[in-house]
Length: 312
Image 1 (tube, rainbow, N blue to C red):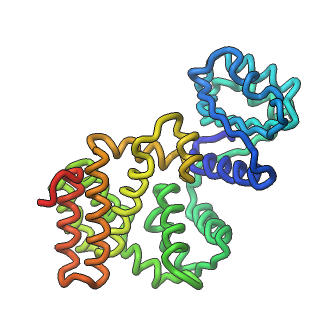
Image 2 (cartoon, one colour; image 1 turned 90 degrees about the vertical axis):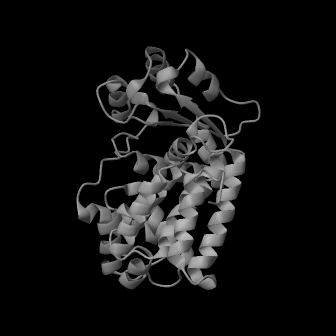
């Protein structure tokens, strides 16, 4: 996988893993970091196992690979193991060019999948349509355009928005549905509110909330933005190991794990538990259980900004 668009690469790697696992549930998945690689690690992992289980080896940061990795990888391509699938993630640059050229030339039966940055709206709209098609859902052209307009600056958030709509709605996804969930530019409002609160900046979060409401955002999708982030943080909390390994075990993408790790700074397990409880309460309040949904969001911001240590 070569190119700067990490989300597309991670998505492709995840789908490859799922396919291989559907072919054989005994698939063994291993992760290597090319920049911190030690001589012989790849060849050890790729050597035939005693019981012949298929293997998937994912190697990150090949654009920063050590000399030992480049030497071992080139040697492996000369005689790859039939039961092993090796995936190399190269983010761009000249480092490792000899290895890439070998793969492009067909060494070891390898192929290159280019993960180029999606710059044009038409490309992003194609991406959205593919996301819905993969879930056997249809979206109107207006809905697709609205999603790209709101989330086009971040492919990962765009994908998350698509998944949220698939999970929360049924039937054809229309522009009216997108507007109901992501009114205006919620990409720069709801998630801005959540990010500020999670980082402990209560004042900034309250200001962002007012700006969001002024531009037409509704409390329900704002609480949904908090839920997406807090639930991922709760899943990742306490996990150890490379992001790829954690992501595989939790059913997440590596970029989600990396973001959650950053967001978890200063949080405790008790604080996360309190935040999850506050989310459940706020979700009920904004969906009709309370008389003042805006106050419910403000109260949630107070809990999250305090990292779950107080409800004041």
